[in-house]
Image (cartoon, rainbow, N blue to C red; front, side, top):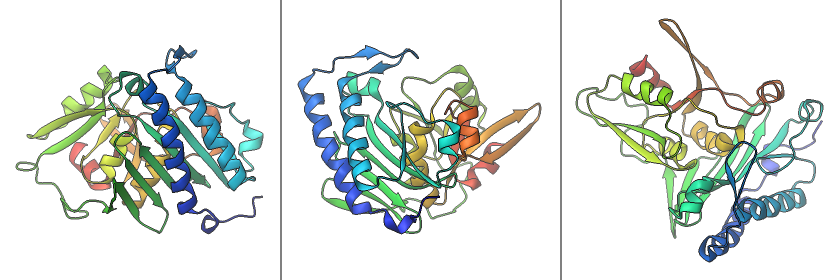
Length: 286
């Protein structure tokens, strides 16, 4: 058993770490020397992914030597090792590698911390935009943009306010690169008269649901646990969640997504189809 509690994890240290890593990523981004290869799943891998992974892992091991690390760019742990961990890191060194290569700026560095199956701490940093979202369970959610600090969710709508189906815009976030037919069909099925589709890269989409800049992010194609873990912690602290979407004939069931060792290993660290939103939104789309 790990003799450590959530209070032992310093947000200040992690903010400093993710910003310093962001500086190194921007050096590669601005140099155009990406050295891109393709992984076995036909997704791109750049020098920035590997360097970022190395910097994050070495720094986290130094800060918290007893905490297991799951990362997209590292060897994955066995069930025997993972099941003994109350805490583990879940990292995506560069989320949105395609956007990194395109130089759209829509990529993020992601640090998530899981405790007993639930994300309890998350940092999502978009270094090009100097935009940092971060949250720790029980301590609130914050957005740092340049030199300004905002508390989330943004107050462009009252917390837990029900949407007026006839007059309010319903903002649906979707992937720029992976909007497949299943997801598009779901978006088409939403019965809201003022639907707006906003397509973006990386985990910024989940953070914008948390901040009230979007209402829902449906994802019915392959994603991995490290793609969403850090932003999931931010959603949870904003009283929103990621719900597993299960449709059987005419009925739809929603379960809250967890990161239990048995499920992660069984599913090869892949996420099921999901909706990221507030619980109130689910009643509008059933």
